[in-house]
Every structure is written in C-alpha cells, then in structure tokens.
Length: 524
Image 1: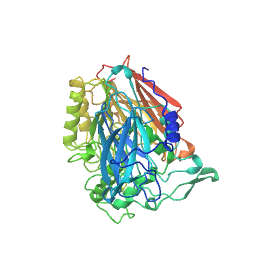
Image 2: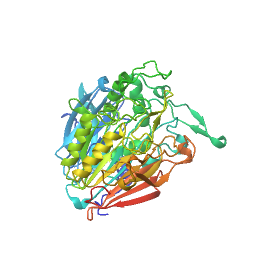
Image 3: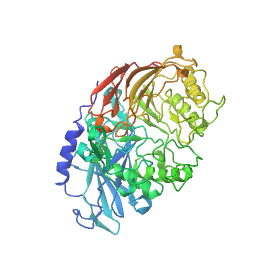
Image 4: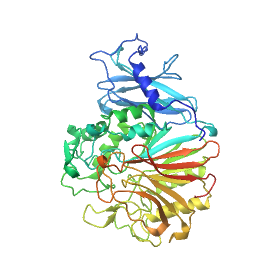
C-alpha cells in the first residue's frame, strides 16, 4: 500500500504525553501564560477530533467547570508558530462540553493541536493543555487511505474491566495508524446497567468499574450524559481519541433496545415510557459528546457524507430516526421503510454526485441478516430482512429500490460496512442466487463488538442472494469479552492501484479474513 510515512500513533502518543508536562502554556485570550493549579479549568475527559476532511476538522473537549475553549494547531509537536482558534464558552447547558471547527487546514498533513480551557472571568487563569493530533484527508490519490470500523461498546453488562486492562481493542486499532475510526453505532448502552461483578463460567468473576449513572437504565438527560462519560473513564479510549479522528453514527442502544419513533415502552424498568422523549434527551447528549458536523447545523442530523479525498466518500446512514414501527415486516408496500423517504432520496442523490473511487455505505444495521425484535412477545423484525427468501417485502422494498438505482446509474465502488450483531462476517450478495435480481453484486462486511456480549450468527435471508463467505461467532449467547469474540475491521485503499482491501480482525489485531476488491466496477 502507498501510504504516508507518518510515525505510528503510539510512538507519537508517548512523545506527546511526555512533552505535555514540559510545555509552557501559550497565552490565552491575550493574557500571560499560566500553569494549571487548583481552581483552574481541567479537561480530564481527554480530547477528540471528528468529521475530518481535506481542509477541516472538529475538536471536542469537556471541562470540569465553566471555561472558554481555545484550540491551537501546529505542524509540529513543539507548537512553534501555532495558529489559534477561539472556541465556545463551555457551561452547564452542554454539560461543559464544546466543539471548535478548524477550517483552512492543509490537506494530507498531520495536524497537532492542544486545547486550553480559560476561566471566563480571568483569561490568565488557564488549565493545563490537552494535546492531540489527526491527519487531514489527502487531496492526492497516491497517498491512499486506511481506516478501521466497529461498534457496540459496554453492552450486555460488560463494562470497563480493570483486571483485563479496560477497552484493550482500542490499542490494537490505534497500532494500525488509521486515518480515522468509523463507529457503526451503539456507542453506549443506555439501557444496559452495570453491576460491580458478574459471574463467569468456571467460577471466574468479571469486575466492572461502575458509576451512579450506569446503575439503572438512562431516562434523564443527566443519566444519558453519564453513559457517554462512562466510556471516557477508559484510558485506552482516551488515548485513541487523542490520535485517531472519528466518524460516528448511532443505533438503538444510545436510547433503548430496538427503539423506533412513536414507541411506547412496556419495559417495567422505565418510568418514562415515551421513546420520543427518551430519544430527544439521548440525542442531545449524543450531540454534546461527539464532534459531528451536521448535528451543529440548523435541523441537525446524524446522516451525512464524509468526503475523504479522491479515493473515498463515506455515506453515514441513520436507520433509527426515520424508520417505521417494528413489525412482521412483510407488507407489500412500504413508503417509509427503515431510512425514510427523505433520507433515501438524499442517499441516492449523494451517491450519484460522488466522484470518489470508493463509496462506503456505513449502515448501522445489516441488510440480509434476520435481526428479530421479540421484546413485546411478537415475532417482529428489527432490521431489514424478515426471513422470507422471496421477492422484497416491507423494509426490503427500500433497499431493493436503492440497489436498483445503483445498478442503473452505473455507480461504481459501493461497499457496505456494519456492526450491530456482535460477531464478524463477510457476505457477498449475488443476483444469480437472489429472488430479486435487478442489482449488481456487492459485499457487506460485519464487525464488532468493541466491548460487549458476543452472540451466535443470525440467519440469512435469500431475497438479495447473500453468500456468507466468512464467519466467526460463538455458539452461545452473550459471551463476555474475557472469552474473546471482540472484533474490528480494517479498510486499506491503495493509492497506486486503487484496490480496496478489507481485513476482519480480532481484538488483538490478528487478521481472520482478507478480501481484495477492484476499483471501477458497478458492484463487486
């Protein structure tokens, strides 16, 4: 692969952490520098960057008190001749979080940044800087692209286990020096309380770090915020966030299991039964704790396209906000589907306008895997496929419309990435094996969980002709991370040939499966 010869993120991180204590603070809002002491703002939750393009990015931080956010950027870790960006005032309205947009950045370059938090009443009182870095997307095809993806963090009662070193998978992902991390949803489990210990097979014990907000299902805004803060207690995640920018989407567990708009919960754990109320609170906390460009615009939304130079566009879907109610999913007509009409038309338009060699469709749910929803005792469907191998029905109709559109518009280089089902697999969809045949072949790759229970493989639905080429999954439900089955995927696009290589990896980085795709084809 032709890829920029930047130093590994772990070596950069070690150097940055060692140097940060020795850095003299730059001036804040024109005031003289001052080191952090008691009573000055602190950024103990680390920093994040997100939605990075060829010339822009977002930087996130959380303060422990009201503060003015200031970001300085530089081409070097020494921060010689830094450029300063004045960010928002952080206060209780956003849980003391804030994001500063950086624009006019050089493409294909390592951007070093440090965040200062200044006392709003006395700009000389500033906290110790927190440092991070990211690479902007390259405008030159020859530089190539590498990223990782996964999903599902702290689910099914498996939280941060200090005995195992916490969320170790982030160290393995960071070691690959990716340009970004695509999180395919379930960033938290707001419906999954944690206990201090969990019994494991063989007389072993799992031990969780616990917090007050993780002691029950999240219902209040404060409880949703606490769920997002919980994951940031893990030092592996904080170190990863400081060196690898993210593209974040959401799925159901940011609110509650298998939710859909208009749902009224029967779950006795909840005093607030209206899912729309819960979703509104969860969405606010979600927007506060991740740097997402579109959520900060009028009518903010999760779905968006992230352009990463000439080789790659990432189409981030939202299969929660606009879906219809979960049902048996076998209706002969379905105008709303899982995406909603507006989002489907947006996706078709963006795909047709894209000039990128590869078009990754980041789907928070799989297409041909039957994902049931039996929470109310009915045989409802949570995702798209319902197990009928015949012509498209229900939500499959919308996917059929999209696949037909891709074929007839001759849109090349589409690849589907997802998580959700808590195992890893590769499916090749072929019209020669399908009931619905008006599409070109394509690949769907599944990876995850990051740190959650692992589950057996879901049944395949034959409507779009999936052939399961690779699978690794346990045979029993809710296998703990202590027993493995934690996964992430890597996508490597070569700048010379344009080939896209997918590698499905275990939590320690071991490669389980590799598939190389050729550019310029409608489907694969």
